[in-house]
Amino acid sequence: MDTPFNPSLHALSHSLDLLKDTYNYNHWIYSLLREHLGDTICEVGAGTGNLTQFFLPAQSVLCIEPEAQYGDALRRLAQVHLNLQVYSGGLADCAGARGHAAAFATVVCVNVLEHIEDDAQALEQMESLLQAGGRLLLYVPAGPWAYGHLDRQLGHFRRYSKRRIRQLAAQVGFELERCIYVNFAGVFGWFWHSRVLGRDVVSPQSAQFVDRLVPYLSAVERLVRPVVGQSLFAVLRKP
Image (tube, rainbow, N blue to C red):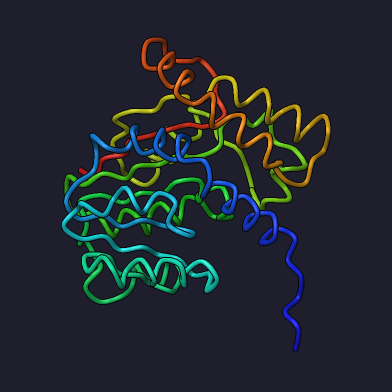
């Protein structure tokens, strides 16, 4: 039997393929995460490992990835790096599995939470994976006003505001240590492609153009924190 065509999964696969060739962008995200990473890391929704590669110096890394087509790439990586394990089920299954409760110093969730309808429940499950004092590093699309056709094609339920992040942190019982906008220029490009042009996917040319700009954008944003951005980066601490 043929597998039913899923436009959201198709668009997401296309985006992950593009991100494999955007090293500067991936490293920019990692540079935000780096100072907050502990020795034991759980990556929620690791995809094909575009960020996982940066976590490998850690003592141990567990990647949660329920999509088989992405998990295969991660398992090939795990054959080379013995400190890397791949969990093929969903977040809820992993949170309930023996040995995973309160097992990690850091949970990383990058561009995943927006794909989950009940985001508060997902945060509760991530919280259960953390040790006391552990941190959830959250990276999500920002600007509800920029939500459009491209978001729907990618399977996004929402884009986030700082207010929503604060509400979620308080609801679940996290201490919000940091919440900043990232990629000032990118949000206007996203609005144009998603809301105005109604694009289905990000073009390779656009992705490569942004990747070339990243060293300059990241340097500017280290000096001057933007008041709006394509993404939000948050650090949530478990008391």
